[in-house]
Image: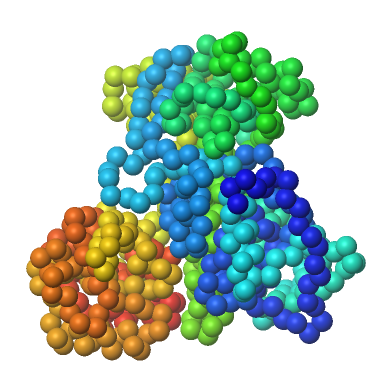
Length: 556
């Protein structure tokens, strides 16, 4: 499958079942977010109908930077390894000012993580791998050339009119999930809008194919001699393809600037006149930082660019969209299966609206630094860059794009507040960190144990739980089909694990350090790998109460 030209794939039209058929979930939009969400829901046992008005995957590199958190999610969906094997892994970035390097940073300086800080991978590969995984899943129906044209929302279902090559048809679903992009037709059908800030600037993307010995790093130039007064970004991609972003300014003519006779001289100024390359794809983009006021409208829920949009600096667009899917999938499954109240979906909106605000804030600040709009802003930026070469405090102010990090849901109503003393690095609402473990004598990774259900992780470094605690944990797990109990044992305890309980060995004590569990601890971790609660000692009634709270059933 590595030789497939995903940009050239064309998918056949097939009609959808209509009439009296009522689909549990209808997803509109087969991009990275819609495909990820379909896989998540199907893995949880829901039947999914996924429609798209096109019959091809994306063309051009488009979104290329995928963060460690997104890779961790894709691991659970069965495509993470393919993404990493094909992608270009990187952790290091360099910042240049007027031709001189002023700062080098490492986004993953600590060892003991399975995935890199980022990979670069063209969006068509990302969509291709997700498509192949979805097409092979019996719980997912993919339908191309299906264009949603009208939506009617009812109390317990949604009716969607769809134009197809056979004419108009009507689809009925319990839930409609709109993953149909920044121009979202579904959003317009509801009379909804996104609000925010439009930035008056233009950037040129040029994908070029060439042989080069540049390191696999992110290079960002401010006011370079080869493109004075503007900024430039260089990224490596698979297949000897390199992505170059040139700032052009608002007055640039988007029609003229994409012509090869105007693009090639810019590239030669960067690479040198003797460098051989060929153009693969060229595009002009403008950008905005905006979001819908509410991501949920009854049985219609928005995710990805249909709900929120940011500038490309910081790689927060596609990554935050996949994290939307990760947040929504388990909640919708619990609600659809009658195991949680409908109001649990409201917490998707609350948590991901907060994440969108955080991403918009970071993206807006990055854009203001990269494209200053006043003499004072320009003076501040250039002074910071001059100081950054020697002064650490100035490096913290350099903003070539605050790169994507997962949001901590600190104020989520699903969290159980701490009642014991812990460090502040991993509060309830934070993403659970990975680490190396030993499972059944084989080396593995901790996040593989957090496989889409609730996990009660019991850290045992000094002694094993007593018989009564083991019995209580086993009874809790038997009562709660969506809960798995895992003991995390120190090397000194791993040679005598308790019978009948799942356990792993924290052979390097990495997890004990990252979870502040040197003196033992117990964590409840959500299906999307966010911490729901933590305690210093096993207390089964408190675990059960925190589980109910994390399912939206009651306060703990």
